[in-house]
Image (cartoon, rainbow, N blue to C red; front, top):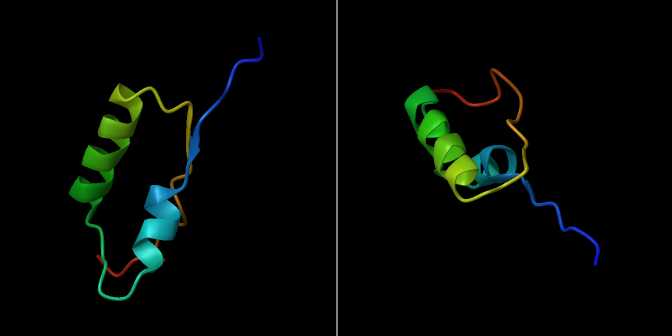
Length: 52
């Protein structure tokens, strides 16, 4: 049986929605929760692309 790897883009794509602006603390919390959930790869986005 093949192993499935999970690649999450919440920190990149989630911050592209109108009215959404993650702080650094938000990003850390999200990344920690994704890690706790067993996500294998977390795309962090681009530094400076978010005003906060």
